[in-house]
Length: 98
Image 1 (cartoon, one colour):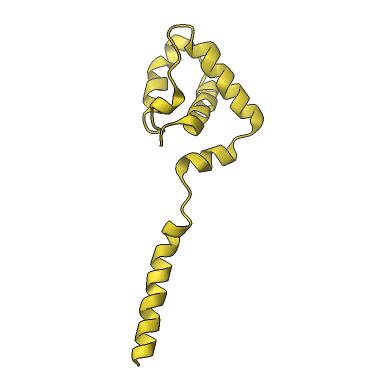
Image 2: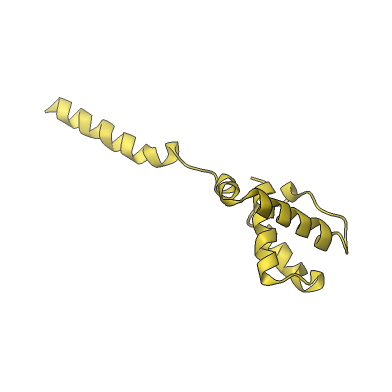
């Protein structure tokens, strides 16, 4: 009986930690969804649109949570479409501070 109980406890511990053992960072998930072309397009948008008005920020200066607010504020000024904004945010997410 003690062996069964011990075995049950070990199984519960292993199962409960399995999610954290194989967790993927959010930045890594975003990076895996991007193609070389989309990275290039995102980088070109960042350089060509954002540098018109100000010095470019290091994408790693902000987190994935911070970038959308910053880009939303600048969207109208930079005259980027919603589709371009999505590409830009995906690119910035790959380089964002972790």
